[in-house]
Length: 465
Image (tube, rainbow, N blue to C red; front, side, top):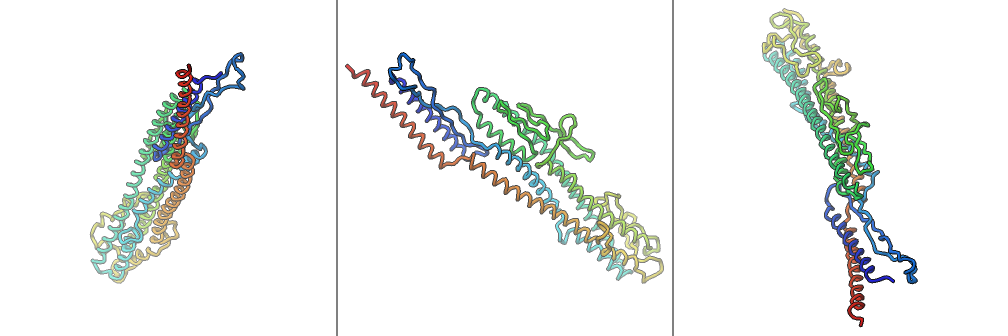
């Protein structure tokens, strides 16, 4: 027949299990505010029963239970939801980075403004109108040179701001690549620790939470595909190439392209297939969007310089000498190089007003240049210079607005996904508090059983005569 020692061991298993359940609950409560933490739950099961030999069963109906045991401690996660969050993290990261860059570009062209390029263009054309009305005025001629110099300086400044921003984004590319490599190294190190723990049959729950948090942060920079391995590690792929494989991380290199800008290459100069995230946003915005703005600004500066020069060289200056080009510039790179012709300098007598010498009332050249303000031969060839510049600024504004709206939409989706994950994996203090009471009562009940069995054994051993 069964003896009291079996009952003591059974009650002891209840004590131990209740204590473990309380420990797990305490761990959950302690990590209620820990980023990326997944609540943990113990799976409990009846421990293997005790079977009496057939000749000594003494009429027992079957096996005797030996109590309870914790079979595993698991974290509560939804793998499919994690995948959705990682994908959305890459999309949101892309638009966040693009929005940040384009907001700076938009700030470089504050229009309408009293100090922007649009105002400088207006004052430049107005100076030619004033000169055509006062052809003999040295002050009017000097005003033309002053406004021409201011216009050129504004083109130089705006182009310089774009170049500075491109250099800044290039630094962001290099920094992002370094961050990717850092995350990869940390994930590989965690893979190694997790392998060592799970090979013994345990679950490395907290380390997996840390790893998942790093993977999510990595996906904000560059999208990856995660493949779970049987040993508890994961393999992270970028475009089919392993960035992390078990405990090995493969470093990405920041290599200069023909323009001197950083691109991402695998060892051996094999380009990384960057399909999204902040890295793609920086690369695309630097090499396509900002360079496109530079090209548009260069085109406008060159068209203005060429058409003004053509008209200016068609007449004669105040001394009767053939007119010189008013502006000099480097073809294809006009915005940063445009300047008033050094051969003219600050000499108002070299400003051309008339088409022919000895015709005091001839202001045809000044009028012709002033009329360029309304000439639909700029930009795409169908715009006035003011319209071409407005189109340029409008494009920057539209791009910035799109990026801001997409960032906002992506953030809303990511917040919704995070809320769904929190409802599954997050710690509920109310639920944990209820568990504390439940496990406490179970512990007390097991302790009461031990006390009762102890009293029974005391009666059996010490009080029977």
